[in-house]
Length: 124
Image (tube, rainbow, N blue to C red; front, side):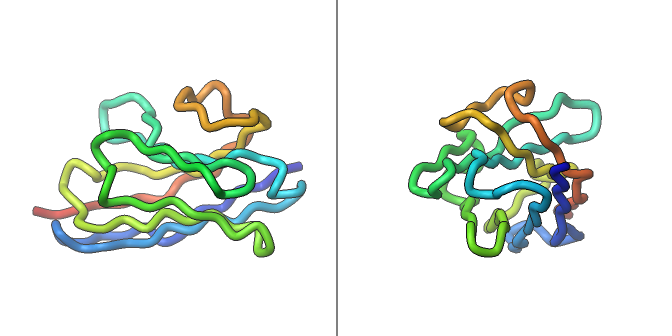
């Protein structure tokens, strides 16, 4: 079975940076579209970024464009999210997710596997 494990979260001041990682095991990583989602307190889980199987195409929610970068290393079965210029509104639990789809979707229901999440807290 697929297992996703996130790491790299923590507490950072506004304007700072963090890099999240997600390790994937149990299946062939390159067969899955991957995404990052987040859930802030009292809010719905929302799409942050996604990347196609090859890593060639990516997509971002508007609020993180120009600040966050999603990437993957299929040889290492790893997914990353580089987050720069962090803002207090980025505070949330961040989840990586895998999908059998062939393109990036923003809908959580289209993702088949989820990690447990890693907390990111940005102080003002």
